[in-house]
Length: 182
Image 1 (cartoon, rainbow, N blue to C red):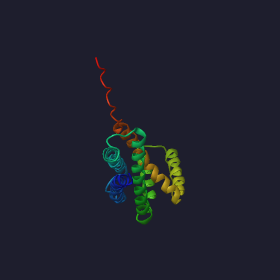
Image 2 (image 1 turned 90 degrees about the vertical axis):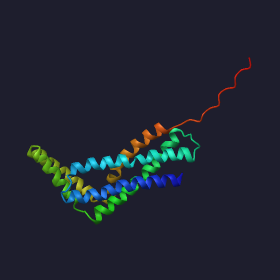
Image 3 (image 1 turned 180 degrees about the horizontal axis):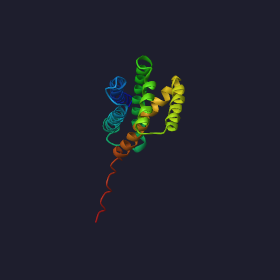
Image 4 (image 1 turned 90 degrees about the horizontal axis):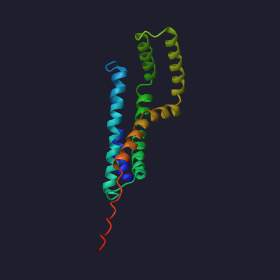
């Protein structure tokens, strides 16, 4: 099981990490809008977490003899998800702290400008600015940063795991009872 979990978890994590590593610099340079990058990012997460489905299916076929219960399928899937999430978090921490420590400043400016362009009141803008400042203070704590980063991707992986476990569960075929002699 370990080999399957690592293989599919690393593939999934690599996909999400690669998209992040490409999209962030494009956002920071203004080539891609933050809103568009969110759509691309969450689409990439869903596609990356399809590896959970394939990992569970591989486990079912190669290890479990073609049958698997929901619980075992969920266990395999959630482990794949955790590996992928861990790789994503490591990638984000390296990119954020090493290359774009001003990301939150840029994102805050984008959010506030978006509110202004939507015609939000000055009070709403000031309230959002205060929220973003509080978040920035929390985000400066590496543990909080890791937790928030993990929570960006984990729910997507959890949903894909639940759906995949439900789809792929397969009970053993029970032998048909012998026909009664007549």
